[in-house]
Image (tube, rainbow over the protein chains, first blue to last red):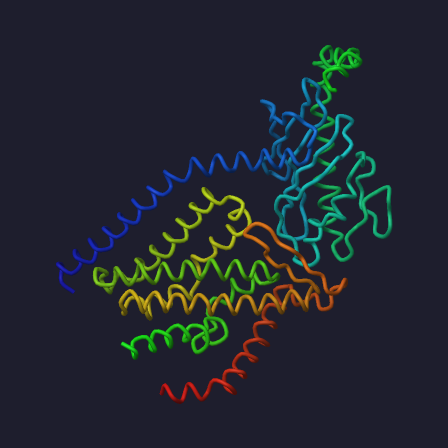
Length: 212
Length: 217
């Protein structure tokens, strides 16, 4: 191989890669604003599904927290000026993955709905955490009842047979820690705004007009 | 003219039967075992490979005269990963609902041995039309294999079939309410399923396709 060949081959590779890079950059520049917008809309839609009554679900300025060294967010759901609930993102350490979960609670911190966003649990066993029968069990559970029971239960959460670790990870790790964090963090904040929320409560009768 | 069209037909069938990526060449087994635990996943993965395989074959065939042989492999990799990335970005931008369901599989395609193998063995030596037909045949053969494997695994392992009813929707048919042979949806079962179906495919091929094979040789 002569020096000329080496230059020829190098140039060939460089030119092809440069062209490839330009094409990718062009596609990325056109697609990325749309991707960003889509992601935002998808998140909004997912939040809206968790608390359908809310007019607005917004992340507060300090709405970040960490669990299992992972960054997560929480949101405040409002109907008019009144806070009707919260949505918190949380992670649970499962059998083979961290389970990314959204938990919606009402203003008394009772779970309303949960949604599993992503996980890598065993197909056929652990992935039943995504089924409606498992998720529906969380409705109206307060933090004291967020524990997994093997066998029939109405008061607590019934484990998925063959996937106790995944059931526990969702219930006692992701959801429970999320709710506990909200109770700890959001309560003082509502006390600060006590005057406003009291005002809403006292003026409840007058608000009825607006609601109808 | 007629001999040309029959050879294209043969080329197309070659990828589906004689050189079926999974059942005959045993390439790309790793990702195919990873995604075939339900029917819907198998079908979407197969479709994604079909698209990328065809586009890569066309691109490589167009570029074959300007590629220096000594650096062909890095250039093939660029073309493959470029097409995968473009497909991913376009889908995320224009069909986000679909992307949310199948985006995961598309990224995996970069590592598919079968696509690099076709670029090296076929597209880099042939003109654009045969290369496209080869890509289509190989892709459809792959789609066929994944569909059969995932159908078998989900039905035997879970007693259900997850059928895509649209790009972002699906319907789960439940045949048995227990899990008859759960191991089939686990990774170990993937190897068993591929082995059993590979044997069945080769047996059928040997029994019914031999005649055709003799004629061509």
